[in-house]
Image (cartoon, rainbow, N blue to C red):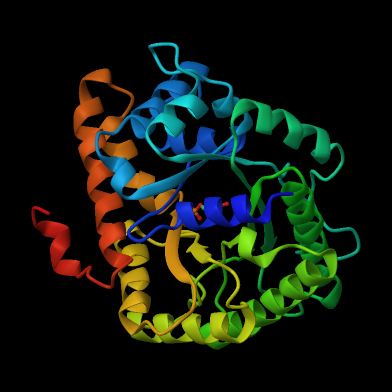
Length: 340
Ligand code: 13P
């Protein structure tokens, strides 16, 4: 393992002004996204939509890395260039989601664990051959009356650490993604409590597994009120609570923290990130790794029609640029209706 190389890649992905595009929707998830614009999930729609994103002119100013899915990693652009090569030629690090999704945790109603460790070492070797430079593994935690349980925290932290160690062994930067879900009527305080325990457990396991903190990125949720909580915390409260939790739990050796959007609207996700960066005074790059919040508007602008490609790319460029401004605390909601 070349620690310097891992650190250089991790830092490159979150270089100032840059973040990550999460375009790693699995087959069921991309089916949902395409259905939202009344399209069937055909292989060609999946390929051409990803090509639209990856060839957006100028977007490499704001996007340092793209997380793909196994099928996308094997796809080619219209001119025959494999997607990993296309991204690399634009100075965007190609990455790949390597977990195999979540399943119910036995004897623990409402809790999930993430599968995909079996054969992971061999799969990683293949992805390295294909040009991958980093990876992602997601665990999920629902908030409920008696959940997460101690076992839920522990087993998910353990899979993240095993995954991260295997990736670094293979020379790949792991993005460690423990996602505390927004669903539910819990308060922001409860989200803060659960996320704190989650991250404490994750870093304890990463340390025990020997993971090099300088050669990884963390992809957490923001600290938010539950989606159906009657009292919704405001932007400043979200920003302060999120930074407080991260300062308490994330070692400063970690180069970057890239948030998931988790169901926030594009504008909310951008505004919250900007508010955090405006507060400043933390040791890591604080950036984005959004799926829905980067793509929602683009999908709607495209709706599967080739003649809409240029407009859809402008839409994607614009949202990526707004998030890049949020990296410097320079986004304001007024920008949503302005030319930028
Ligand atoms: P969202 O930003 O849509 O939550 O997706 C990020 C992601 O990669 C989830 O695993």
